[in-house]
Length: 272
Ligand SMILES: NC(=O)c1ccc[n+]([C@@H]2O[C@H](COP(=O)([O-])OP(=O)(O)OC[C@H]3O[C@@H](n4cnc5c(N)ncnc54)[C@H](OP(=O)(O)O)[C@@H]3O)[C@@H](O)[C@H]2O)c1
Image 1: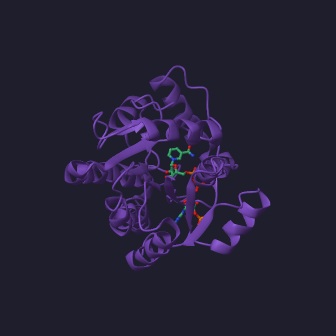
Image 2: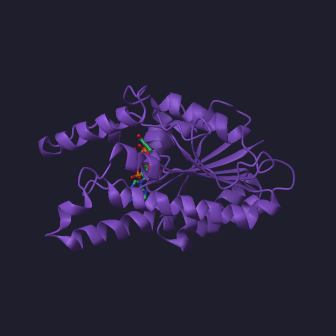
């Protein structure tokens, strides 16, 4: 009975992960959320009765360790898949460049620190808390996945000229390095660490109306994506994205040389 913990399971891709995973009654599916009552109400309303929700704050190691103890009582002490999906996507800098903060550097500094504290350190703390459960698996998969972003790919940034959203991209770039470091450390134990980009996906956050002043930056980013990948047609649906990521995650292994990779849902550098 494979077990899954998905962080940031209350909405967006996280909710889609638990929806698809719960469709197989053989899976034990646990969503890590910041507001358990709200997540439970949403899941009930959508017929996801079998999903367990556990509350945690990704910036707080003690809260994550307490969540891991709760997960142990659900799974019997082990965990097959840890999917680190939660992320802070800054509205402060999403459509701004580093140069837009010349007159307000402290705002940029605090935005970079917040992005790193959730998207990089938050994942490192989550892995720290849940690693013993992965290590306790004696027969079956043990995989720690980080949902990262092609926005941290240097070739994409340089070829497409994507200057916006630096704090987010920096935090995901640091996350990619952390995942490679975990692979170097734990591949000998057969634990797969891998960073996967889900594509450009029409979650609620992505489809919300952008401010008038940000529309030019958004159009320029779309044009940059199309220049980098001529087949780029815009966003894909959450169900397509998550089906692709899960297909890759199930197939990937340390033995196949996937450990420490930073790849798209196709298993390569095709981000769109
Ligand atoms: N959508 C895309 O096009 C796209 C592209 C590339 C990569 N990604 C990556 O895919 C993942 C999911 O993206 P998404 O579009 O589904 O994002 P989303 O709709 O904004 O959802 C983000 C999730 O992370 C949690 N979260 C947000 N801010 C947080 C914070 N400050 N502290 C703790 N948790 C926080 C949220 O939980 P709460 O409900 O508790 O706020 C939510 O469940 C992220 O890692 C993102 O970087 C997405």
